[in-house]
Amino acid sequence: MEPLFLGGHPAIDFLNTAFSPQGASIEVLTDGVALVDWLVAANLLDTKTAANLKRRYGGKPLDATAAEARKVREWARDWLDRWRDADAGSYSAELRRLNELLGRAPREREVVAGSGGLQLHEHLRIETPDELLALLAEQIALLLTHESPSLVKRCAGSGCTLSFLDRTKAHKRVFCSAQTCGNRAKVAAFRVRQRKA
Image (tube, rainbow, N blue to C red; front, top):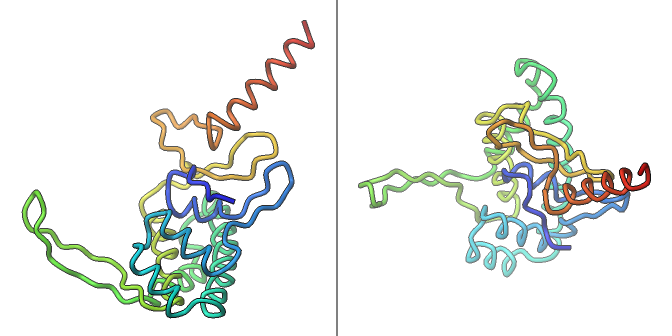
């Protein structure tokens, strides 16, 4: 299954790596290679680092990291569901866990010349499978610190379990995708009107 990038934020797209369209469960992060490939597709990991990790740690180490990533995903999904409904002060255990995950990879800083002059770039240095979890934790942290909980929504499409970050101006978005769930809802509403007529 090709990964879906409909969430509007990498943390939401990470949550959407397990979904159940029409009740059929789909798991995108089936193993370590699938996790690495998803991180590359999400632009969170460069292809050179991905190839090095696959070559050096393929098999069991990467698979173990994927299993832990699936647990992190469900933990984050539960936390984000509660985040919408409570104040931030009640999350001390979650913050400890998030900070532990963030600390798994060292930060690397470098000054580079850009179009606007010199710029300081900071990024995680990924050299082992375990450090991949820090990439996921960083996106969860960015979502929690830069977005409003009220803008994290679940798709209103019948049978859809996907989430998304509503970045529309009026914050009235209700479907993960206007082309899929939105069109299905329009067709269903049209059929109901036809039957009534």
